[in-house]
Image 1 (cartoon, one colour):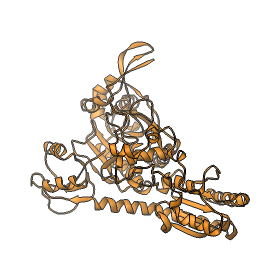
Image 2 (image 1 turned 45 degrees about the horizontal axis):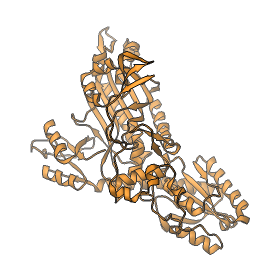
Image 3 (image 1 turned 90 degrees about the horizontal axis):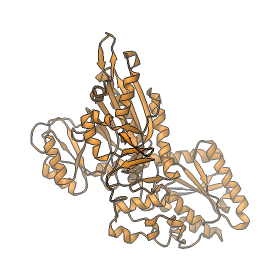
Image 4 (image 1 turned 45 degrees about the vertical axis):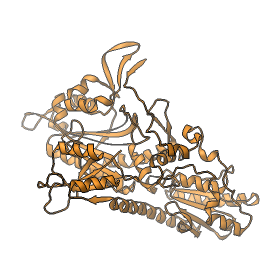
Amino acid sequence: MLSLRLTSFTHLFSPPTSAAVAHRSPAILRRRHHPLRQRPLASSFSAQSAAAETKDRVDNSKNRVTERVITPRSQDFNAWYLDVIANAELADYGPVRGTMVIRPYGYAIWEAIQEYLNVKFKETGHSNMYFPQFIPYSFIEKEASHVEGFSPELALVTIGGGKELEEKLVVRPTSETIVNHMFTQWIHSYRDLPLMINQWANVTRWEMRTKPFVRTLEFLWQEGHTAHATLEEAENEAIQMIDIYTRFAYEQAAIPVITGRKSKVETFAGAVKTYTIEAMMGDKKALQAGTSHNLGQNFARAFGTQFTDENGLREYVWQTSWAISTRFVGGIIMTHGDDAGLMLPPKIAPIQVVIVPIWKDDEKAAVLNAASSVKDVLQRSGIKVKLDDSDQRTPGWKFNFWEMKGVPLRIEIGPRDVASGSVVISRRDIPGKQGKVFGISMEPSNLEAYVKDKLDDIQSSLLEKAIAFRDSNIIDVSTYDELKAAISQGKWARGPWSASDEYELKVKEETGATIRCFPFEQPQGIKRCLMTGNPAEEVAIFAKSY
């Protein structure tokens, strides 16, 4: 038996506004059943004639549900976000306040993130391993700024096996301390360096205000830890890993993050420098999507992690740590989703293409045979495809369901398509008639090439759209008044900064915004601090954040 001594927790997740509650049925709030399974469609799909089949495909509005089940983004962004998670079956509430159950579709997105990063980690010389989730409290206390930074979020085990523990245990909030304890036993000589490991694990932080994927009591992540012989090697490692995160964000998730260095106030507890990727969400708030820390020798000195160098001298190692978590799933939702639901970049979509066959009773066998052939062609070419051949729902219901799940491409196959040897293809990112193309040949090489080309185009288009949105919502400022005006409009402010930590905290207190980072890409020329008027070498980005 384990006993956890924890602070009180008053909210399950950030409470929705009254307007959001009014817009969502009790069924959605309880999350007992899928909303689309509770409500009939406005009209069922009809394929009585060739004309009716074409009309239904073009006018998809006839297959919409009678009652909106996703709150419009513009009306209540938080309610929209929770609705998308519920309706797209990404996650559900856990029985412990502030926890979530990641459902298969949501976990498949996390697996896509894992698959990409695992390859990159191993390509750069890192090995996967695993550390215990229970950490002696004395380990946390060894690094003063670390314990100060994490103390309010710790979950402590005080009883085990029915007995009071001699030393309370911390449920892993992060692993720098236990990693250093082990590194001290494994590192003896310069020949043991660099030591570069990564673990995929769960983390517990007792957050008081939570939001699914973005901030929960427990979440999943990877955390990398490395030890080096020199400061230069550690710095290069920290930069290398934030670059990997940046490439992932742009190339896989189609999220145009801004990469940079955290301010001293925002630096990870126990680190010398923290590098970050900051993403702009659909409500223009910033999301810290990944971090990489140069730990210097802080933890090495606290734990006595030393090595004998080539000259026979004992030296402390230089270290890094870096992490990305399931919070990135929330970032994908909030960057690309729309009023219809989730919108997934093809490279991380669990299903890239869904095939929806359309038939009348006497045509079912021929249509399903053609649909199966199309599925086989696409699967052999490495495309992740789903054939929805269930007969419990109308084609129109399926259109809306898979659109809400964010599947990038939909292929429709009806009797006329079988006769003509062609299919109809619709893009998730372009609604209505503009995103629908008729008469695409079923010939394997032609179909494969067309689908792959469209998936690449969707990936690029989502990134371009996100870049345009980001850039249109960053305002360059040169005075504090201009900064306050930009933040009051819900935008990001970018301006020269060389002021003190006290001034930075003043900005946070008066505007709710923090310095997200000092971007790596800096403008040239002489700059004056927007707060003090003193010379400033860098511009900083300020924004409200999650």
